[in-house]
Length: 361
Ligand SMILES: C[S@@+](CC[C@H](N)C(=O)[O-])C[C@H]1O[C@@H](n2cnc3c(N)ncnc32)[C@H](O)[C@@H]1O
Image 1 (cartoon, rainbow, N blue to C red):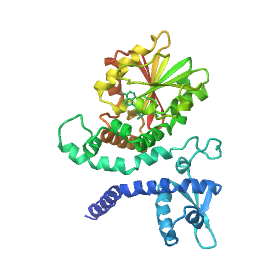
Image 2 (spheres, rainbow, N blue to C red):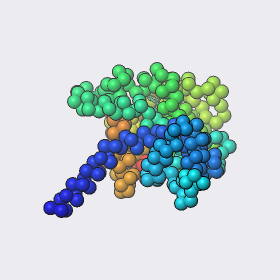
Image 3 (cartoon, helix red, strand yellow):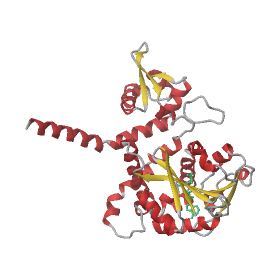
Image 4 (tube, rainbow, N blue to C red):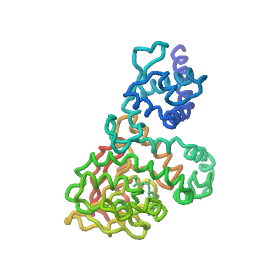
């Protein structure tokens, strides 16, 4: 009986914690929007509560509340707390590897421990727009019409057309997607023996620029919708680093030794993925001549680590909220590769939640 009672209390604690998950998410939004990471970074990597309160220009009455917000972050590992205190009994806080990813990067800034800022990506994930769309899940589950996403039901338009219609949403989405581009060159071996690369649906060219900087001999081209290509400053068009081509990947993909599809196929149904992959196959040389596509996406179950696996599952849900796509396991990936006419693939689970999948004709 006592054991049952203990189990009940534990279950109640866990359920309450999950129910308040959004508060954690909103606290992350608060840290990201206020720039707590930048404030600690500017103070040399360590700041007291009073320093932060002043640096963030918060109302004088909110000092104690700031401490309560940061306490949540210390528990979740977003920031670290030192043992010593300032003269007023306030704690000192430091960046952790996680919050280093929230520090804004400037072109000449290499003093932070992270190689890239995920701030724009985090801001998109915790945006009221994504949250409101996710709230539409219940109605969507009850309704038919597979083509419509919860996003479409809530906002009356598909995600991509909404990005096209709202320059603000489009820009924040493009920045979010480009934010993690620095990570991909860590897996540099997949770019060996390539002289030309098309980044299919490559957004504003973050990944293509990272590849071009790391492998200057590779001629990099980005294909994306006119609404995205047109949004890039005129100075970027046709520069020596990356070429931009406006078009629809469903219809045509420029030819290259290899194609990159980063965070693209998970946005689409199997039927659309097969169509895109067929266009890809037409654009590359044979396997003997070195043709391949490089996919960067989640392979569900690629990691047995609970945090990684759980994050993949959450990503699968937000993808379903925003797009008609899904995260796929290895069997599901192989099925669409085969149906598009590819004969071989190799998965390298080297990018945290995501994998690099090389697919050969
Ligand atoms: C999730 S984003 C990925 C962007 C980029 N690959 C990255 O990771 O930074 C998907 C991209 O697909 C583009 N897109 C959507 N439909 C497209 C189409 N039919 N043809 C070409 N690009 C398309 C969007 O404009 C967007 O830039």
